[in-house]
Every structure is written in C-alpha cells, then in structure tokens.
Length: 193
Image 1 (cartoon, rainbow, N blue to C red):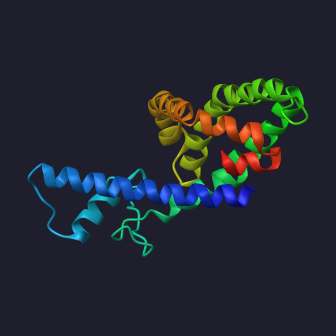
Image 2: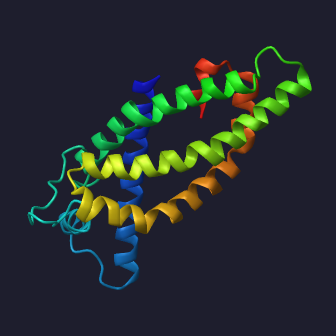
Image 3: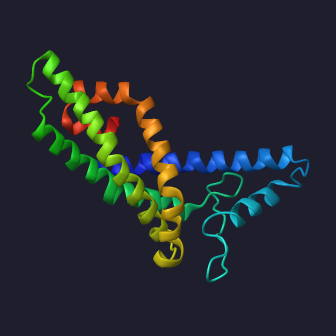
C-alpha cells in the first residue's frame, strides 16, 4: 500500500510539473514575449524552480524523463519518499484508528453510513492538516533545502493556502470518500483515497 501510494504521488507530481510547464509557457506566449525555443522554456522553468539558485547558487539539472527537458527528478523522488514513508503509513494507521473508534464494518445500514461520514469528516479535519504540513516539510528537506532558511519560511507562506485548497478538494471528493469508507474494507481505503 505504501509503495503504491508513493507511486501515485510520483505520478501526481509529474502531472503537476507538466501543468506548471504548460502554465508558464502559456503565460509567456500571452505576454507577447513568445518563447524562442523549447530549451529556453525549459531553462526558464528550471531557473524558477524551488531548487534553483539557493545558497550554493547551483541550478537544478533537467532530467531526460522530459517535460520538454524540465522534469525535476529530485522533486518527484521527494514526493515518492514522503508518501512512502509518512503519508501512506499515517493514512493506514489513521483509518485503522477511525475504524476502532467508530466502526463501519459490522454495523447496520444507517449506523454504518453515519460511521463512514464521521470517518470522512475526521480525515478532512485532522489528517489533511497533517498531510499538508508533513508534505511541505518532508519534500523541502528531501529536495535538499535548508530547514531554517527555506523550508520553515515556505511552510509559513504556503501552509494556509495549501490547506484551504486541500479542504476544497476534500469537499469536492467527499461523495467518493464516503463511498470508499462505507463500502470498502479498511485495507483498501488508503488506495481509494
């Protein structure tokens, strides 16, 4: 489950980097500046990445895994490891705890539904905040950023907006989450959510 969660996080980060690339490219074209070449766009995206510059002045090296040569492999691996080592185990143990406190399995129709709804709310209220915080901190550290100079200031700047986005996403996906908590065994909930 943890490895699968890590792979899903890695693929999600690849998609996010592709979206960032497309967004930056679209903004350049709309501003009238255009893009001289793919390599110019790639170098600009790499230059603007969180790992560019920094205290050592080194720039992130583009990967051959290509989003036009801009894929930040280290960031992808950081997301994989964070999910493998922190988020997936936390979800696994959190969902087991929810099941022990308010069991869905073995209840009758309405009681199981109320229990599943309480699991969804507990996940959204308690676990989402933890996931956002650990995701920002662990990924920043695994990307090689200084805890004091980069990670903590970044956490202060992006935690609340990221948590708001997470709550909005959780709200939109609540029906799916409810169905997962209501009808799937505890062992499969981590994969479905």
